[in-house]
Length: 237
Image (cartoon, rainbow, N blue to C red; front, side, top):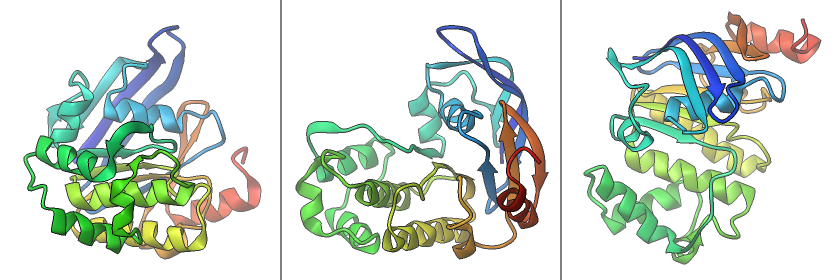
């Protein structure tokens, strides 16, 4: 399981506390939904799980199957089975997407088979010509999200953090994203889905847990009924 235990997190450069006493446990095959207003610390939490140098853990632990990983660099966390998809993935010039995917697979000790890569790409609704393009350069919002879903399906991580994958995408892209989440859940991967909207939740299993993050603290935890309450009353309720 992926467990965040009594976690306090600060901005590394300034020391400003951004997350306070975060406790969250995600078991294999579980879907957890994290919601909260802008600036509440949702992306900070995603970055902290991955191990971004922008943030410093001042108290608490991150445990992966009982092993403390809070001091490991991002690449080691990824190798151990953690995948994080961000709202705005970086552009990489002069590196086409096929080369990028092969490098990522090789780094994880996986077979960089072109036939499988092309098959996964088609599965998320992208054609083979896409593989010739520089990574994320000129990609539309939907293409970026679908490309990250392709990485997710290729890597098969044990735990996935998705930072607003439904933001700024059309209905068709949303369908592919929801389909990918359903597939990895069926493989018993744990998922933390960060979202502002209930739009994608209607296409996912209904037995998810919801956590409401406000001012860096988890203020409420519950089931799908909590989403309906938030939509009706807002985060101030």
